[in-house]
Image (cartoon, rainbow, N blue to C red; front, side, top):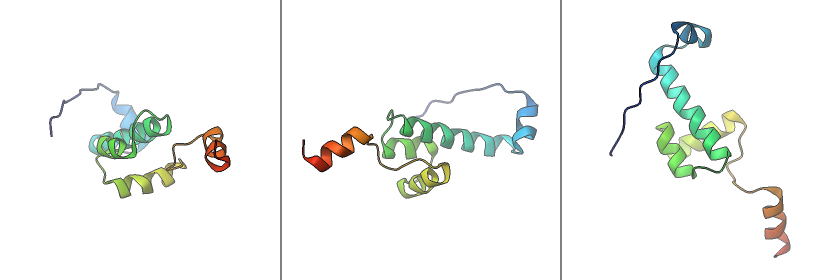
Length: 85
């Protein structure tokens, strides 16, 4: 896999406020970003799982933890699908 390393400077107090060490913080940040980008429709499930560093099934479980639907349809799309637009 071709990767790019990104560096981020944060105050040390962030880690204590979140009660996380830097490695766990990075993992949680990747997951949170992936979930949000998926929720916004910017990433597919597969790509979001890759960003999060999880399998697709693990990512689906994470979506539930965050209260995000695994389905990327809005109400108009669902109605159109059911009605047979």
